[in-house]
Length: 587
Image (cartoon, rainbow, N blue to C red; front, side, top):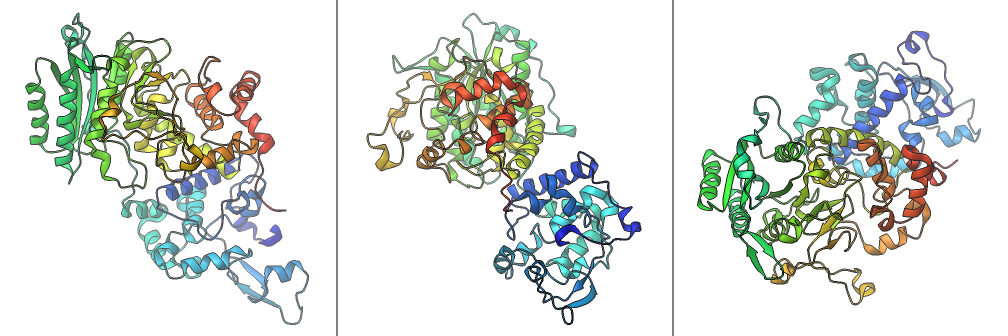
């Protein structure tokens, strides 16, 4: 009710959770908003009618305005005719002789100006109406989150006729009760899934001690953990990249000085297969045997689903926990792809070969105090990662990482806080929008894992070429051409040392970044800079990088952040973003 003034039956009020600050109502209300934001990220729901504002979602001091209508059994009534606008009410222009008429239900749909224009976008799209948060989905999420089965509207509720898409939602609620929304998502074939398996397919822990003779070879074998995928419909491409990688692995370690492969060190491969038929699995085994004795293979497991891509990293982590003085390499035959982009280069042989060559090169395998993870190209944005997610790392670093499966769970939880902070404008996303991949949700967590620790010291080997005229081209660095042999002109160096984000990333430009870097209100709140990184480091590992870390020199305002970190510790993000935070609500 505008003005949040009303008269209500106590029998209804008794059904509501108490609205005190920090209570269960506030907690569950936040959870319902987070659930919507995540479903919107995955394309399951939308919010066309209104922008993201704390007053529209009922957070903080606005939660009391949402409280009275927070139960599914609400039966509103009012005194004004439908043609009386909210503006007429607040200006005191109501005609007592003609404008009053008691009635049940909700006679008007909106009280703010942007809704009529936005509603036009939805009028001819029934599916968009069905998924619109400010219609039924948002109310159902709220009711189910707050009250469970007691939050299920009756089949004769006014909401089914008032809101677009009501008939379809009424049938879902009739059949599935408080699980109706989850069932809708299930029927829509959501794009999210875990990178790990459960139940009977759960990966058995491999006994690495049985390979003590191989691993203790005096020639110091290169230990490779290999994730192999055979997606349905793309098995031929998967096999081609597989062959290319085995050729690289069997050649030895690439030496930039001689331009040849050093064959002194044998290669021990631990591989998992995701998807594919028994004949595909047998093909991998025969390929291993054909490369013997240079290459020794051990199969970790075979998973029926190609979704399972994290178990190999889980085993790599176990290996490093048991052998902290070792070094490990991780490669995969299927390249990660940007969320929402269906590119065919996930099986680009040229890139797969180059990334594999880099990760197993003498430059990357060499132990160095200044670097603990090495790959082809390192980028700090939108999260700290190596192109292709292939790398070599010291086990002394890897053993301190959260196990990959626990890391996936932790990243999903961290996103809850981040999404709410973004709504409250404590974080900004001026450089590039939130996506499931940028936040490391579910299956995308495995791309964030290797660079997640505050002790991370990256280096890379790809050539670095600067543009002669960056203001004309819009870029300071020229992307590497993986169709050219020059991409193998490796040049080892501490990273980051090229552009902030991979070339051709959607909705990002260096010009936009240069604007952001000139404004403190963005620098201190930008999630992809130190605000977001420090938030994650403290949530995951309860520490920040040491003063010698590259992050304080590379990220904007690093000196200020370091001093803030010393002064405030785990509260540094809250303290340094607070002066620039506003609700974004006009008063």
